[in-house]
Amino acid sequence: MKTYKDITGDGGSNIVEQVTAQQDRVRARMASVRHIVAVMSGKGGVGKSSVVVNLGSALALQDYSVGILDADINGSSIAKMTGVRGRPLETGETGVMPTAAARNLKVMSIDLFLQDDSMPVIWDAPTQKDAYTWRGMMETAAIREFLSDTEWGELDFLFIDLPPGTDKLPNMLDLLPEISGTIIVTIPSELSQFVVGKSIKVAKDLLRTPVIGLVENMSMHVCSQCGHEEKLFPGTTVEELAQQYGVPYLGKIPFDPNMAVCADEGSLYLEKHGDLPATNAIGQIAQRVEEFLNR
Ligand SMILES: Nc1ncnc2c1ncn2[C@@H]1O[C@H](COP(=O)(O)OP(=O)(O)O)[C@@H](O)[C@H]1O
Ligand SMILES: [Mg+2]
Image (cartoon, rainbow, N blue to C red; front, side, top):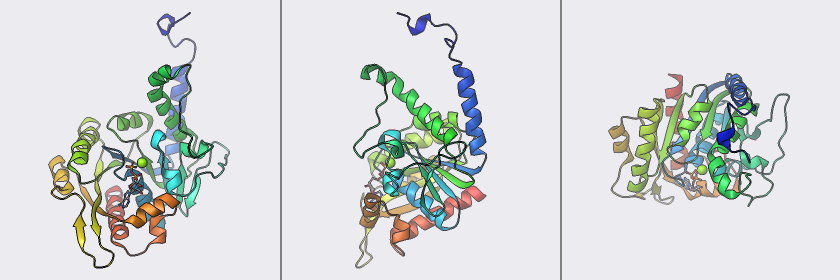
């Protein structure tokens, strides 16, 4: 049996040409996108996808044309959160059409290709032991395919919901022509801030991508009866963390059970709820993002 050590060159697969051709397709696709924004976090569960959906819908409501690419292949939640899960995908002339979640808001996710709710993404390999080696590469290949084969059309903003962790942004940057910046999401727990510091360092110092800023999610609870604010994680401040790392602080989003309900039922929080502390906070953060990018 031949092993990879016996293969000389690319083994006749033309892999370099194939990847180069796909990179050219990605570049051509992204030419109609004004700003690519990667959204990252240190830990999972801090509300990264919620921030993506809410910032995306805030900008879409202002008549910007917005796309969301769910790149968190194993924890994909954008399709469910925006209520488009299970909708049949349409193919266009040169690729697959993203699904419209609302006016000006388009979504693409691996979730749209899976048949039922409980189906996980499992990479095919002769044995699952082999899948371990391939997983990272296949994930990257899948995202590259999404980037090259989705017909976004003209977009003002393309938000990319990255998987949690520090190693995902470098992979992503290899695939993309140029990104306008990153948004980093954390909750104010000391643990989350400890981990998110590493993500900031990777984005800012290692990869030298513009950091649009840090979003503090689930910062406090505002009583719906009396407006009293109560911190959910007393004693720590994300604003200081932003200062310490020299990145902009974009603002804090309160915990609002309505937001969680909307995510679960697949309705857009900003469309459903008007003037609330969290909807206003999201509006302000969206404005700061817009200002940063239009600068
Ligand atoms: N500000 C918030 N208020 C209420 N619930 C929130 C808020 N942010 C996130 N959630 C909820 O917390 C859970 C995790 O959020 P999610 O966006 O999926 O996190 P991540 O993408 O970082 O894993 C979800 O159930 C979501 O609805
Ligand atoms: Mg998520």
